Length: 430
Ligand code: SF4
Image (cartoon, rainbow, N blue to C red; front, top):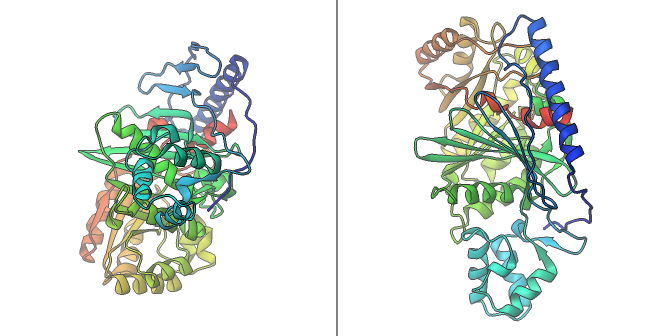
């Protein structure tokens, strides 16, 4: 349960937007200069910005003309009117809602109606909850608020497969949430923290550092936000991946409480097998998932198959060396009879050679494992290049020799900075 806090937000002004856009262009130009000084030509050229206003008191839209991907500034949602005395109702479990409603003398039938309004109808105000008695709605309004994220930026990839949101929280922290669409399957990639303390060298979130853990309600609200967006197009959310900003096992209690709410069969009713939690290798968290028999999929960011290789990319490898990490993974697999998905970011000349592939094969041979090879997303703070496609094919062939299934992920959303933390980093520099 988390109490909201008092805050004040300045309404965006024309000056604020124009200044922000100028800063963004400056950041793109600086990025391009850095890339061209290193002989790279991947990033798009900066283009003149076209700014148009539909200005009402708090609503206007600014579009930036790009050849492939429109960027739309959505500053149209007022911030959540949280006050010190209100509680985020999306952060409560069914049992907590039930206890609260019964303690105030309302009939038990109201509980599942309220829960349905919150998690199936995706209500955006208590006034919409017309199946509840007026007296209950009034009292709910006095004690709770609905966590409706404020979208400060929404971008669509040119291939139409990805939409990325930059969401602003009550304390001005920003987080990223991504909608991904693959042949009829819609997936939400959500954040578990504002920033991240793990410091993976190639990750924009890690480069920016840690701000704070997200609350249960803030994690649930991201999923409901995507579900609302899909519903307007007659579509439905199928999967959730906790692969956005943050290390989910560093915020274990809030993340797993949110998972429980999302899996509740009276609400969104997402099965645990449709939820994937990605960790950089927090050993106590992996063991706890196994001990608590949590029915979620586990993805582990490996990136290096020796301690020296791994810690050069993932500093947390110093705290939990590979031997300890592999013990925990085997414990998890055996206890839950679950396959672990190992993520391997392919970095040209760093971890994509034949020798690297053999060391991954030796490390994981005999485990119920699948390796997902992911070409690196470029970030300003890391001087690495994505692994080439022929190296990926060669890597996969070697893993097959060790009976390890593998996939090569498509690079999606490159044009909208879809890598974890990239959108927020771009916004922060503006
Ligand atoms: S890759 Fe994940 S764990 Fe590593 S710094 Fe980025 S967000 Fe954190």
